[in-house]
Image: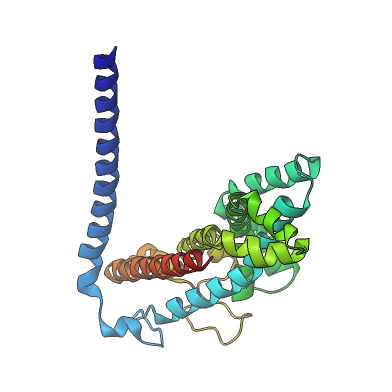
Length: 276
């Protein structure tokens, strides 16, 4: 019996290591392929602030990506976090309302991005009359990432021990003060993890933005102007077939931007977690 258990443990260990090595190998291959294809074509003209058919600059798309990310998070993050606070701290546990909200959230998280894009086209672009604009794209993305932020924030709040709440109430603090001074700071690393994932989805989204923000390669002067993000810029270059090499170079820059965002966000989350 002991010999059989040891063999089973060794077999599971081998399978685990093989799975880990396979995952690392696939990731290394993808990243290496993008770098080999794109790095030789990264040149100063790609970072010009004015786009034209010769330099196919990615700088307007990069700036538009930052603007789109900031606006989307300003809309979705407060709604998602406060919705999670309501579900965990204020709503009656096990109630039908909570079950319906959670089921709706899970349903929204499984909807393909192209469907969000069509909704944004019909509602924000056409019905509200915003046209192809950064604002229409940002609101569409905010709806897309809202379930992700909401669910991750909810799980982070649930992970806070009840002793924190009991200790705060025992010292005379009210519900609102306990939530904002004790619970939210303790759950902030988990909440930031959800926001980091949301940022990754915003940066990598293409289908929804083509139908809402458009594909104009310019730095938007205001949120009502059309613009393209880095992912849309890369898609446009690849689909046109005239600047495929520059498309690979854009992919390298996009990958580096995502790595930078994740690294900085992880350090911030670790610092906040240490303080909390």
